[in-house]
Length: 121
View (cartoon, rainbow, N blue to C red):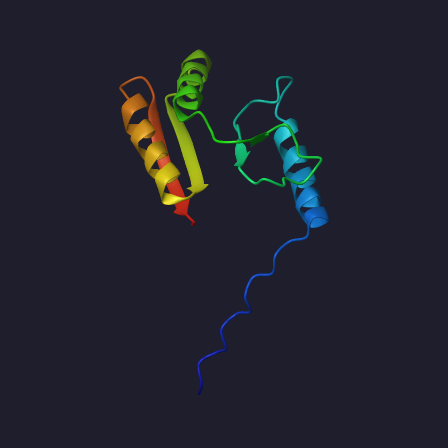
C-alpha cells in the first residue's frame, strides 16, 4: 500500500492556550516544597518582544545567565547532598552549546551535570 500521509503542520497556540499550558506547569512546579524548589527546578526564558501575560514564576524574560545558573545549581546540589544534576536544554544551537560546555566545566568528582538537549532554530 501507500505510505501514510504526513502529519499536519503544527498549529500555533493562541496566547490564551499558552497561558493555560503555563498554569498546568506552574501547578506541577510549585507543589515541590515551601521554597518552590525541589527535584524540579525549571527555568524558562522568553526572548519574545511580545510575551503573553500571566506567566508563572519560573518564566524569565530575556537571555539566561548561564554561568550564574550553573553556579547556583552546583551550590544547591552540594547543599542537598546531590551528586548528579540533569540539565535539559531546548534551545537554539548556540545556547545548547553554551549549556553543554557549562555542564563539562562545572562537573567534577562532587557533582556531575548530565546533559540532554533538543535544538530548534
